Length: 221
Image (cartoon, rainbow, N blue to C red; front, side):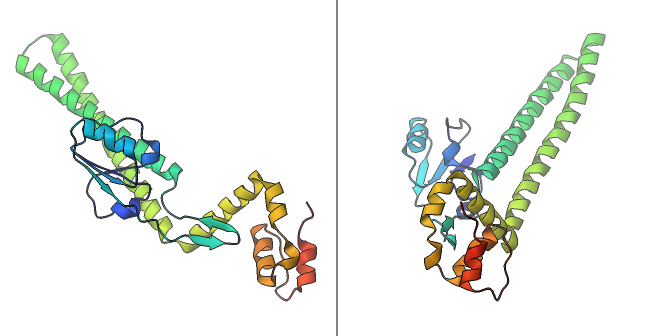
């Protein structure tokens, strides 16, 4: 199994393997046969090399950042989305492993060729469990495909990206309003900057408004 550690899934689009966010790394995956690391993560590299797993470290090319007002937002795989993807993959692997174990038990029971009612009952129960496990595996795979599709759609949806930027901008202002107020010397701003600021605060204004009229609309904090 190949594992690719990267904070930005797009850089590993041509790779075949499991993509994991290095920011959430805790311990090495013992099933790994090959590891690629985008960026400088010496602990991950050392852990796998100690297991004699081939490790390739590549330079992480950061995507171009989008600037809106005074906030720089990098559009890529968010930690929340990566966590959901990682959880879905882990659940899928768990279900597949359980399914394999159940099938092995069934083969052992069938080879025993016992007429015992207890064995027959256990055999039937395990077969039912395999059916349920297969369904669970398919469900987990469908959820993973759905999550990846939603992310691909998000990358190509400019309005959704702009909405996300606005959410992050609003959240940053809420976390540190005092710093924001100090940094906003509105008197020296241009009309376009004032309009952009008002729009980020969901404050309406007339397109023909003068600078003085726009300044009056800014809340006094």
